[in-house]
Amino acid sequence: MTTSLGIVSSGRGENLRYILQEEQSGRLPAQVKIVLTDQPDAGALKIAKEFCVPGNFIDPTNLRREEYDKKLITHLEAAGVELVILTGYMRILSPQFVRHYKGRILNIHPALLPSFRGMDAFSQALEYGVKWTGTTIHIVDEDVDHGPIVYQKPVPVLENDTHESLKARIQRAEYKAYPKAIKMFIEEKPKISGRKLVWQREEK
Image 1 (spheres, helix red, strand yellow):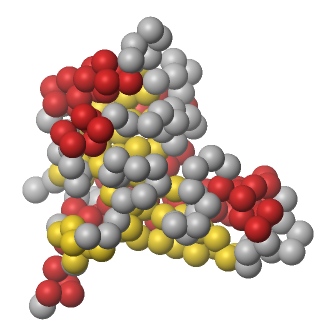
Image 2: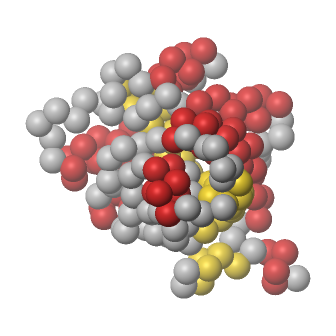
């Protein structure tokens, strides 16, 4: 039995490529049913086309956030989506959307949350002088980069790192981490307990 995924993206969509590769290999018990973007030239749409997955640009022009998210929900529901996956989505989801898919939205952030929330986590890490940063996959709640953590992968910060070199290293970690986190989430069906996830393996 596979879980139906809906991808919501704004940018390059490279995480989508690795999710689809894992799906096609049979290692990920899921199927991407639809890809939605708020940018007409989003890379995620090109990748969706490459993998023969339905993709749609939904124009946010002149729409309030709640109105836009209603359109997203309509498309996702029509595709039978069970789990929403955000890949570089640059809009803040409305409380209405988060409640509709409560506990069923995953996001990836390029830092080890709760550190360096918000925009440009790479620069934040370099400016702070940390020796380690990384990537976090978490459940989306009504606050930004805040929900319970599913999986984290640390990445070292090197002495000579630039914004671009650190970004590239974290992105390489993301490509493995996101499919792994989705697989864990689907197979083990963790329960949310406050800020923590209780995994089935911990209950045995």
